[in-house]
Length: 164
Image (cartoon, rainbow, N blue to C red; front, side, top):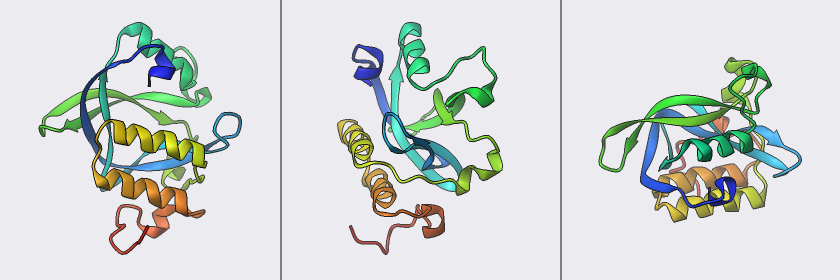
């Protein structure tokens, strides 16, 4: 995050978004050369992350990094802002702003999958460690890096029978 905004943001808490899972729905051919993270609606699932307190200039830098312009047709953005409610480590629901990849047809989102590159995987993994995210986060991330197929078919949120 520091690299994206030029300064260290204030971290409020780790948190999760209910009824969504981690997905890699779009391919980054220039920067990451693999799938990049997205949130995919899925009943009963959780996506783990961190809550940051950001200034308006910091948010504008993230908008630029994520390929988002508020005055442009959302279909032409790489990611779009999404207002969500997350659950923090104390169990309190918090309003937050996140980004969701622009995939065109929303009905296709749950079926899209691009395996993330090792480099991107490491960035996401290190971020999870830095914020003290739970084992569940890392289990889901491991599924994404070891498969070339869409983890939806593998029930990404049920890694109980898999070994790593």
